[in-house]
Image (cartoon, rainbow, N blue to C red; front, top):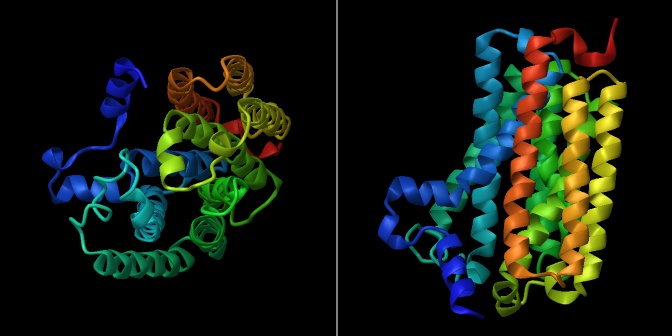
Length: 314
């Protein structure tokens, strides 16, 4: 590794103990940026499903319970991954891996908060919102973290379904049902997740090798990873068109969504052509996250400006 690459990895690593305190440790425990992006996907789906017309109290409940549920699942994930986190330089300063927080206490609090969010969601929102939370837990913790992550690159499938659960829940919170549009909004995240994970895993390929975690960029030819990301980009384009045809999103969202999926496909091609270059993957990771965040912002703004777009009803 060159000195420049080493410096980049150091700069991109997670916060060290020097910058920690209890608040910083909690933020790291729940992966604040990742959790916030998932909550954004959930709230955007809620708005697209017609939630924009609900009272403020409902908006606050959806966001608060969603944040609690996703944060709890993430913390439980950290509990089970603390041994491999302690091996990888990028993650060894996480609060559980470094021993700054008590693992059993974190697990107990996280499970309690998750159960509370499930109960409160079923009472004050609807049962389908609770089902979406349960789906996220089952696929993230049971399928991805416990059963598959350390055994097969196919673990990403379970992880992707978990990532799509908040969107499923957001639509269900607004409409009181899980229908084809809920599935399309969930699929939008599902097909984005592999690019998000694999670009990052490429940059930290040696970390995953050290921890014996068989992420696809670690065990496969770069062209295989590129094909997986490219295929996801194509499906993303189809999902965007489907949402537009169902009048869930408008023309501006359609245009940006197709641009984002095309750009993601181009980055997959370049990833393959560069042989899975780590520095390119790091840049692609940032762009991939940016595209999803902007897409949701555009969809919500367009819905707010032209509320009649939603639900495909005349």
